[in-house]
Structures are given as structure tokens and as C-alpha cells.
Length: 342
Image (cartoon, rainbow, N blue to C red; front, side):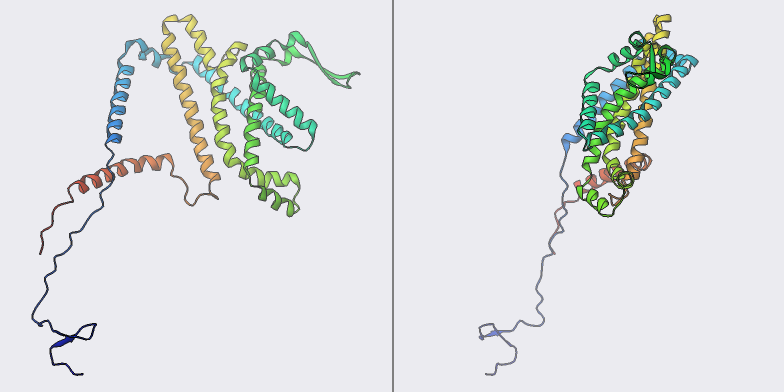
């Protein structure tokens, strides 16, 4: 069937009149829609309240004459305070190393197949975590009253070497031994938890390669366990830094002990001396926290696609990110305007 020129055929086959070539259909453009970000007015209000409270706290801290900031500056770098700080650093360093080594040994004993090793390790951890640290220090300080001499030899037989306990147990030795014994009990559980966090397949793969057990632990198990051990042990290390203030009770003048001695001589400067101790402890724990970040960042190389930014990188990117976010929200607020039809 033929159709006259200018006719169109519908889907049903019925001829329809063709649209004139000169006729143009007018189409109204659709207004562009922008996605509005979710508003958080409560967050801005909470931020403003926190900033106001923080400003009031800083203002009161700076203007209150009770703190005696002039005396604080006088005592902050005095030789007596610096000598006590050096003692604190020495006690912390020795106790941290010995405590970690003892914790590793105790953790391996807890995971051993020997029931004797497991029982002794569990008893040690249970006892040292139950007794307060100050009791351990005072007990060791008076240890010479119980055992005046120490000997090494055959049990129930002759002694080969004898030591005078009063000469060995100096104030520094008592402080380091007491803190190390206490720290080893907590470090043992931290290390044991890190070893247990390693996937069992890693143990099986290392055993399948025929590697010695010591080599398996040093090269395969321990590096993977450190990812979970480091944050927990650094938390213990920060607690150890503060726990050194207890060695004052065994006649060792650390940072806190030096401030206490000066406070008894200058009773009017007790508050600024306590502020000096507080600021020095804040500095020490901050340094430990920074070291923790970089050590964690080092061991995260094989597990994270991108390494976390350093504190300096965050400090540089922080103001720029806040300005970009504020600009985006303010631009979006005036973006929705009615669009006229064409």
C-alpha cells in the first residue's frame, strides 16, 4: 500500500499527518539540581561551647596569681629539678627494657607446652598484678632484713658465691628491680595477646617451611605481633613514666622526689613546684606518644594501602581542609535559585 507524500506511518500501520518541517518543539530545560550536604548545627554549637570553655580555662590559668608563674619559671630548669629528671629517665629506661624482656619470657612460658612453665608464669603474673607497686618497692627496700646475704651454689649444699645484699641493693637498684618486676607481669599479657593475634596460618606456614622455632618467632611471628603489641605496651610505658614517682618512697630523688624535697624547704612554692613536675611529665609522655606514632607507622607498611599522615602533615592540611569545607557549605547555601523556563 502506498501512502501520499508527507504522511507518516504509526506503529499500528495507520497513516498519520506529518509534522511540518518548519515547526520546532519548544522544550523547557530542566534546572540543574545540586545535592545539599547534611547540616550539622549541633556540631557547630558544641564546637563553639567547647572553645568558649577552653578560652575561659586558659584565661583563668594565666591570670590566677595562685599559680605563681614567675616562680614556675624560676624552678623549671633548676639543677635540682634537672637531676631528678635525669634519674626519672634512667629508671624508666632500665625498667622498660628489663620489663619488656621479662614480659617476652613470661609470655613464651605461658604459651609453652610445659605445665610447669605455664604454672610458674601464670602464678607470677597473678601475684605481681595483685600486689600494689608501692608494696613491692617497700618490700624490696627492706629485703636486707629478711636475707642479709645472697648465695649461689648447690641447693641444700655448699655455696660457691656469696653477696652482701645491703651493698647490692642501692636505691637505684631497688627502684629498677621493683618497677621491672611489676612491668614484666603486665608486659607478659600484652606480648601474649599480640602473639595470639597472629593468624594460625602463619604458624603453620612457618612450620611447613621447616624453620627452627626460634627463627619462626623472631622473623615471622614477632614482627606481625608487634602491630598489636606496640599500642598496648606504649600505654604501659606511659604508665611506667608516671609510676617512677613512687621511687621517692625508697629514698631515690627522682623528678617528683626532688620537687617534694624542695617543697618542704620552700613551702610557699609547693604549687609552682607541682606545676613544674606536671609540665615535665606532660613533655615526657608526649615524646613517648610521638615515638609510638612513628613506630606504628613503620609496622603498618605491609597492612595499609596508604600510610597515615604525620602530625606535621595533619597540621598543614588542617586549616586548608576547614576553609575548603566552610567555603563549600556557604556556596551551597546560595546555590538553589529558581530557574526561568526558556
